[in-house]
Image: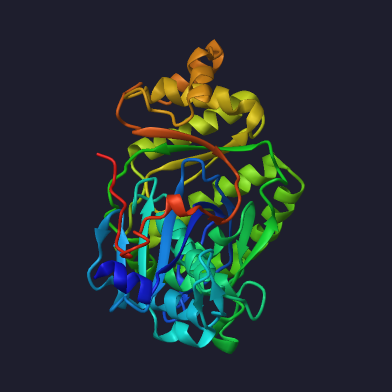
Length: 419
């Protein structure tokens, strides 16, 4: 019966991967909850998808009787009726065109509005731990739906306006390289609150990122709840949004385009510190960083002071995990310093084997180690769970049929998480 149904009502599907992004100038606080728009602009680096990505399969068929969603192998009951999910699905449906897949199955433009959708998505990194997993997830959702429905934008950046209704920072993951989210204005339902690529992933090939996973647990205060409380109670947040961020946006875009790491790094660290200061200025205060996070900050400053220039720049999103931006020529040295104070906890402690080998073989200069020891940090395995070595990367990528998370005959989830 299932095979007969599949022949009568074929399943059309597409699979896409999307990257995470880590903001250098942070977005915190909503101007419009309804449209999920920010009180200030922001800009981020899109990270390479070799290890950090969301993979999403979207499928449609007349045989489906309801919208269904699976996340990391588990069905999310009722999730398909959530405001965020519906905004993405219905937003892309409004842009849908005629679609013909590789097998010759055709769906007409006018048919999309009545078709039910199945979605299966998984992340290759900790969800809800402050690593922008929702950005990758919603970017992958919108990109997969757009591919599935052969969606065509009515104006440049329109798909990013749909993605931001799922998760604000998701709009920045629809492009590679260095991507700005322009805050926009309330006219025309915030249609100009969208993402724009400042520079592609090939612009600054020497740029690297080290991600130190301090915790892979779900954070105590969600970003949505934290933003709401900050907007309601923090006067510092309002000042930051109107007086500080506009100048920083202009300066950091200039620094990135000019490959000026000193300026880029100082702006990135200053904005991270100010973001977390607004969290402390919130009432009651919000604590996203912990003692391990703060010890990483101290070591980065020691390293830069020792080098007599800015060679490393930390940033922390809404969580304790550190992202350290640096350049290729200094990356092994910085990683070796971090490995000394946050020793390995297993063979897969660093995601890249070749890089890990270089780091373990590197001898830290004695005077640097002497200065670092003055921070009071003692080496302790387990404080950092894993280190990712990565770089800037492209936006969403279309994947093969073999990489799909849904069964092409039934439309049901096939993804099973690794033990």
